[in-house]
Length: 423
Ligand code: NAD
Image 1: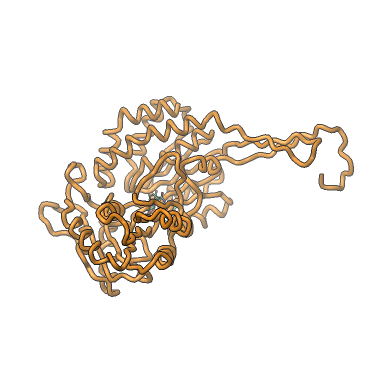
Image 2 (image 1 turned 30 degrees about the vertical axis):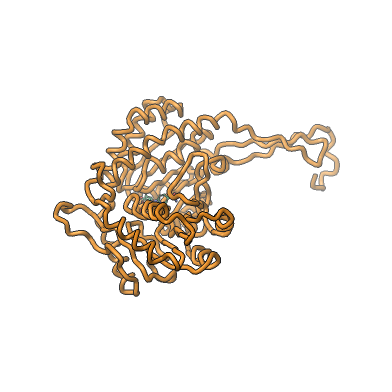
């Protein structure tokens, strides 16, 4: 059934991607690439479905035959954000279904349409009625009703940290467990020995891809002092050539942001950073190009002279805004990178293989990319630490997210012995 669903998604990929672009304003070619990757996730998890076989564990008690069953949790409440609705939903649905659970899905009120389109395909794939359900509406009351419902066995949430805190409080009433995939303030760390042209592309991809509206946005550029001026100059030159425009146009690099209040918030955060002492190297405003009409655009923005304690370096902007901070040596880079409330991802740009592994071990986060950025695979765990959440999507780690273990003890002897002793 999962494979059938994957095939249907592949057949309807262009339609699903254009629905997403219409809803959230992200580039059509990015949404199409995301939707076209979904069948791989269903294929991978279809492969796991008949391999969840528990375990037989020999105990230190020879008269006992002991085994562990791995069982589904039941009904999962899956709450998703607007930025990549179907990708992030698939990261939940494919494993939870393969592992024997059912789902009630609540997409974001800003971008619900593609999830409803997927529900049609789920019906067409002949999944049992009621296995996947979609409710649409705002966080409160719709999402809250799901969070507080006593028959939800687990919540799987992707969204912002403030929402996650509120959900965790509400879920506590029923002690409903929740996995939380949240935002970040991810450092992209460029060493002087890096291939600087490649690193410029990686830093650009990290912060201006999807107009910065990704949880893994590399929104802090940590750059080694001796190459900082040269690197920022190259980066600004590339940034100033980026084309803003209609997200459906294949020539566009930067589309609009998702909704008006989001555009105003990005602008307010940049103004605050400048008031705090940051310097605008480029961007920093809503563009006034008449060709952009009244689209919700924000110029790709680079701020220098940022210190790691400024709000712009600590809070998630979720827009095309990069803060540049200089470091002196490896230890200094690690200190700055880890001095953050978040811990989702990090990028390291270096040609030194020992440094790459040392950095990977030191960084306090869930994903490290070396000489690349913004990569994901169905086989690799995805998740953060600190305010970036807990739990893991994807890869074999997700098996534990959507199952629980049941220990079964079979006493092969007949005697119970002393009724008052722990056996
Ligand atoms: P959000 O937290 O505002 O909303 C996420 C979802 O939660 C929406 O469906 C919303 O309706 C729902 N919601 C809001 N209040 C609720 C409540 N009280 N009870 C139940 N549900 C409630 O996030 P957003 O603005 O849609 O998305 C952006 C955020 O998502 C960013 O912080 C981003 O970093 C994060 N994100 C994380 C990942 C990841 O994998 N770690 C991926 C994408 C986005």
